[in-house]
Image (cartoon, rainbow, N blue to C red):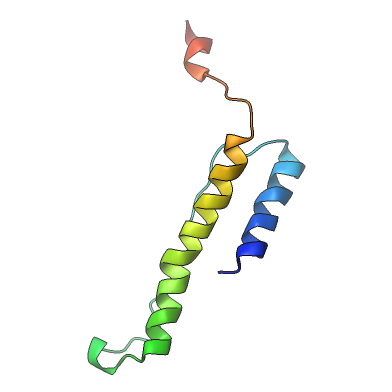
Amino acid sequence: TNEAHVDNAVQKAATKFGRVDIGVNCAGVCDPKEPTDRLSLKDWQRTININQTGVWLSQRALIRQMLTQTYYNTNRLWL
């Protein structure tokens, strides 16, 4: 959930491949496996940071990159 690391990863992908057209966020944790009444605030915040904030940071960085790119309407290729 490091904003600079996420932005840098998207920039590296765009540089290497010329553009970014899709992003898949597939990360999550379910640790520790404790009942809610025994889960510490620290553990809850770690779960939220990875499962939600990490996804949001990734999507935001990808969207910002995609907005700088030329849009190709692939539907016109089939006409």
